[in-house]
Image 1 (spheres, rainbow over the protein chains, first blue to last red):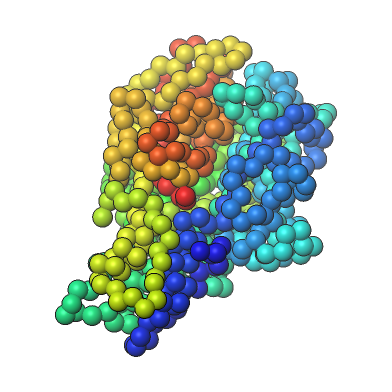
Image 2 (spheres, helix red, strand yellow; image 1 turned 180 degrees about the vertical axis):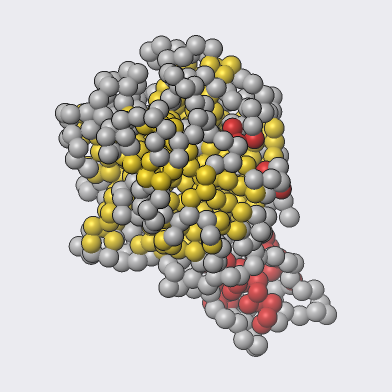
Length: 388
Length: 182
């Protein structure tokens, strides 16, 4: 069939069902969900791009591994992915720098344009240099694109991989030729309809067998097993919240079994109303993509930082446990920035809970302030339902 | 309903009198796959010693030894790998923990032995405090069904006789895989 369009399933009434209606709903929906808008690009072609000191720079992605919606070109505008369909996109990024000195750090994440205005850069990890190691920074973001479909259009929403390094001079992107394969990377995938079009608070589709005579298909059956199924799969439970208060995190000697919970007071999306008082509660069972980031103000006595996800679920032992992520060396610049991430895909039952957890160690036992939604390294959590 | 293949786009022929079984194949089967996708979750609950390089780094396949879920029976504990049952794109997340520091840590996703993208590459604290370190990797990778397999890999430099940390549930090395698209 032709390229599928954004699913918009019918509401069925009693009476004949015509094949165009089934084709428009089921065939289109299956085609769309089989191959949603998706992009994976890297920079692999020498010479590597030069990144100026302390200048956030879009990274040219000269190699496409996947581009199902045609939002990118590998021979022009290499740093830009234009949104071709509206919706929420899960974006994953990584960028290393070819520097083995001891000065500064690298950080990478998502930039671009949304609604005609520059998107606030949203960086992931902040990875200090040292130990003769070419560090890289990874991160995840969830972004809604709505001005779409016009590649290269001045007001079309777009996403970029951006990187910043603070070594004191220009450095090249690191392109590692073979195993291991460090190189700049951006992956993005459509995961849900725009909030203005989605239908929330639906159950996970049951997908029963179709009625056998003398039973017959009713409009209620069609609406439950075509319309609502597509509506759920095209707008599954999603959460994205930022920290927006003014608190600080005490120093600890080691990542504890249950970390300090962080309240995320600014919501970007919570379509199933699952978040409250620093806890997200699974509205339905499923396999969830979960990302957490802890951003903190750094100091000269900062030693280590980590982000975790505190899960309370029978699938993870029944009692609360923090699944720690990148527990790493901290940046120790005065009044600077630190950021660490955690990323998991978790099996949850309805009613299971997740909290964002934070850890930092300071050699003078100082507390460190959280970075809020206004910071490029904002403290945040993202959760997206992936499968039953 | 398990073990079903990624669906073809159904065709509804006009002028055809379908049976209920036709609708099962046109609607129920593809929607079932798209709802309940190929998934796998494993962790490592045993101590594993990573060798350590100085310049190029020593690479070690993570020995995940405990299967938490494997909806298509694709995991092999003997080879520590997930063999893709069907061709397509898979979202992979990997976490590796390190007991001894200071080291540099990379965590990567491998497909049939080849590193896809090293998506965690940073230093760990530990020179004075010995804070346990870890790294998270993620990648969306393409696998040819039956032929390609997915593994997690840890690469460390700067330490000696570095081991993973399995002292608590929150520190277990883990890998999670879900099929996302054709």
